[in-house]
Amino acid sequence: MLFDLDGTLIDSKGDIAAACNHALASLGRAQLPVDVIAGFVGDGARMLLARALARPPEDPVVDQALAVFHPFYEAHPADRTKLLPGAREALDALVDRPIGIVTNKPRGATIAALSALGVLSRFAVVRTGSDGPLKPDARAVTAALDVVGVAPADAWMVGDGDQDILAGRAAGCFTVAVSGGFQSSARIAASAPDVVLESLHALVPMIRAAG
Image (spheres, rainbow, N blue to C red):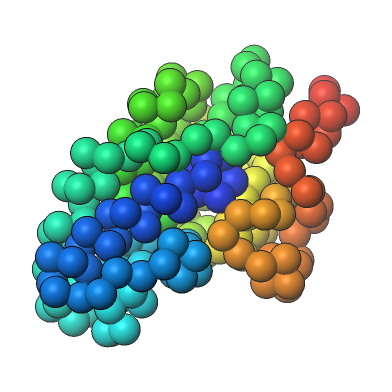
């Protein structure tokens, strides 16, 4: 079982927005509302800041923003962040199986957030946006599965965005979309997940039924 992180297992909008706005302020830019920044999330920190700055991702000003964003976020990974409803129950239901994280979030912030929430030890593998191709590239998923020695046909990819579903499908996994995260229901549906759930609470009976 592989999980996306932001919007799937954790509600991290507030801390992502705080780090983004800190980076914007360092460049003399105006602060942006949390919901606006949330709409930029999903394709890694560089794309997040490029969208917030309305600049191409390769623009040097984006590199300047990243140099401020990363240390701030790693120092404040869970000031406001919490596990989403059903997340702890889903992890508890999987205690006897290898589970992993596949996220486009930078490694430093990912490990810091999972540690602050007390769940890092639950995961056999944590694949981040710092480790190679980003979702929707299937290699983000297959690299995680290689670590735990599980074939894609025997794995589920669970996420709140089309990046997760597209990466999981391309890798050959069963895909589970969870509503209410960073992406709209319409965009998630367009990625054609195998199952769409209202929350992670609904994942628990699926896990038990799978045996």
